[in-house]
Amino acid sequence: MAISNHERVRISLEILCQGLYPYFQREMQAIYKEDWLKTAKSCLSDEPNLNRNVEDVLREDISALLKVMTRQWDQVFRKKLDYPKRRLASEILDFRHKWAHEKRFSTDDTYRALDSIVRLLKAISASEADIVEKQKQEVLEMLSPQQVEEARIREKLADIHKLLIFRDEKLLRRALTHRSYVHENPGEGEHNERLEFLGDALLNFLSGEYLYRLHPERGEDELTRRRSALVDEKQLAKFAIEVGLDFRMRLGKGAILDGGFQNPNLLSSTFEAVVGAYYLDNDANIEAVRAMIEPLFDSVPEQMVVSRSKVDSKNRFQEWVQRNVTTNPPKYVTEQVGGLSHAPEFIARVFVNEKNYGEGKGRNKKDAEKAAAEDALAKLKKQGLL
Image 1 (cartoon, rainbow, N blue to C red):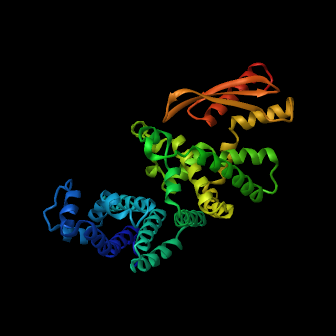
Image 2 (cartoon, rainbow, N blue to C red):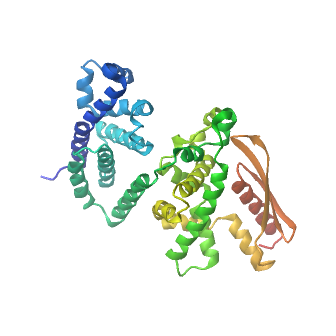
Image 3 (cartoon, rainbow, N blue to C red):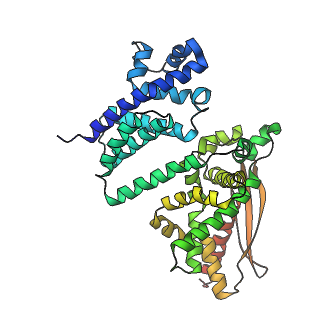
């Protein structure tokens, strides 16, 4: 009799609990000594029916175990497990809730749940990982070719976490430090804007080289548009979240209150800074950066790159200029005109042969320049030139 997806998830969650509990107990005892169960119980104070022995609950209920782990992450578990593993714990907790409410598990959902469980078990070197891995491979055989490719991409992204390890922790800390944090904590050293500059240059080069190899039939204009789409703010923000940088960013209190951990501008800037820092940490070895970044490029669906590339205002304006005015690209002059340290405002003006064609404002230089290009395109359209 074939086993259902719901049952596969149940079995794998039980195996996870079995493999995770000894590690959990050991790490909690190392910090809290004989008070570890008391501390664990305090983390479960919102549980409505905590009448049983706490140790029995933790041994048998993966939901309780993961809740305590996530709530004690900074105090106990982050010393040996990185932040992407915390995200795994949260994902598995979501799968556990879905299973408990008897929600339907698709084959793809089941694969993702088992994959997350395997990765967490492997992170703590638990032998139970091999048991769930076998279940995962059985589910993989039931996926469609497209789903199999997506699963492989997820595994590639998981490998990035293994690569993104810094020898110089101070360099990583600087890459994660926003100007707003330094403003509120003057003794914390340098913020990440110089590293952001370096990372931006590296990403532009690597994305250009990547697309040049991937699309030998495409011309310069098309490759330029695709490069802009591959490393635009929204996409880099997604990369930042995928490699677990969101809640690692060091932001000032004002930036946090303004939703900084979800702010695409802050996320993309931090990602650029981390790329720059990773390059320096690896002795300016661009091959190390390429190994880290290309799986992320591979994970972006082709149709998404194409659709974004069609609407890039800066590229559209540059194409018009080079067809109708000069072969030289437009020149953008951008400056900060106001805003707070964590939410600046920029204004950009775009010139062609010293003539001002448009201007625009934005929360960062890229957005301001795009707005200036959009203004220039709107003026050209109004004049009947576009």
